[in-house]
Length: 109
Image (tube, rainbow, N blue to C red):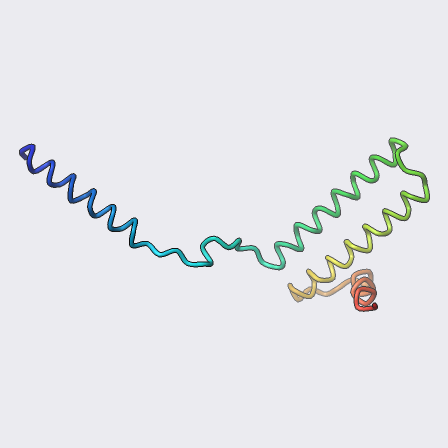
């Protein structure tokens, strides 16, 4: 191969690359996050469990009174049950009595 052949091949390759790059059309869904409702619920569940662990640690460290600890713990547990109930609905799982109760409390105004 001569130098001219190599230069022509490089120019053709560069031209093909440029044409390909500028002809790609982005779809709106390309930039949208691909997270399902279940993914969001699982993230929320994990965050609640982490909050419960942190709460227990801070209570043992003496940062919360008994009343504050019990109130906050109960609130987080109710929220966890609600999230689990929603996950059961999405996955078709059988809800536990606690998640059924949480779902019914959520429906109340």
